[in-house]
Length: 175
Image (cartoon, one colour):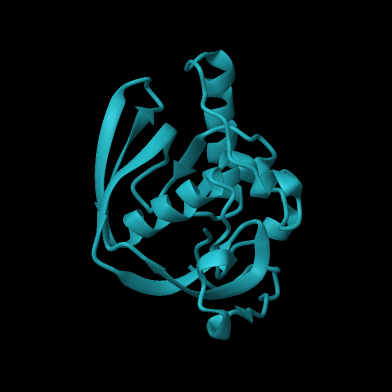
């Protein structure tokens, strides 16, 4: 997912590391990560950098061509990673506009659970259980979908899908 980038000088269009819609890796179910080793730690830091550079709220392994069950997110409280995340519970419903770093310039209304509980392993190798609601719940569901080969357009109300004008720096004005 992306966030508004008004006044910033980079464009996620410039980031050649992000896989675009149409690449088959985005439709594959990602594989579990066996252990948190130096390679996975390096991948987490690379994903943090790509996510920050693209002004994303979240990024999943398949979005950078790595079909592994890993995601990163940052909703303004600093970056975090989840390895082998699993949705344990969900309740309620929220509908909001979503976009995706893998489909620049497209957005639409997507229904999601309002509250979720996700288990996984964090960037420090600790088992964690995250109870999320609102924006964090939305971001985690969006990225969990990527690990299953699902893209937001699969869930979006087709009548709300629209292209968003890019500002003069090429940044998209959306979440």
